[in-house]
Length: 223
View (cartoon, rainbow, N blue to C red):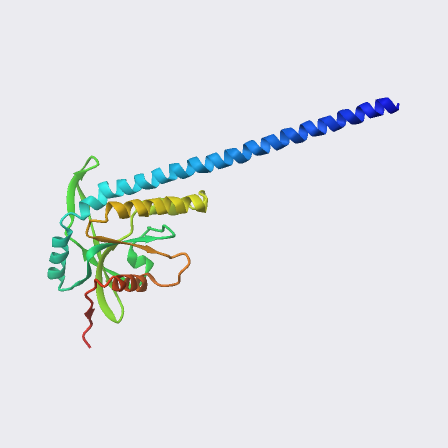
């Protein structure tokens, strides 16, 4: 009986060791898979972010920035105003919420019109129209800007419930960085607006950022 008991005990001990070894090996494989998956994901996300930026540049910004200085001057003359900056202001909210107009995001941003439209045959459509909106920043000073939010960011905003925040943020940063590089010699300014952690209103943020760049021409309201 003692010999039989010893044999059973030894077999049980060996089985426990084998099971523990298999479990440990599986855990290592799982961990390694996660590491490889994350690395591959990051490489892929960078490519996707860059692709979105290139798509935005070629399909939209390259068109609307064409001859924008002349179109801004004509708008100023026709509306008897002075733009705060002679550049297109591209706002990139960290939330990626690009839905709606700027007026809908801040009551102190009032839509006043758009620059001369760019009309081209594009994407299988004849006479496709590309617009650039002009907004008045309400407040102590009467200021005007040509501004917009990149529409590809809205895709990330809609995916926030099914995409990990780390990956989503990586998408966003790759998009903004690539777009900034593509537009660095164009007549525009790219601003990252922290609408997630800051309580500063959008209109106040715009005035502060543009004034800090020392490129403003503010028109004081008559008393």
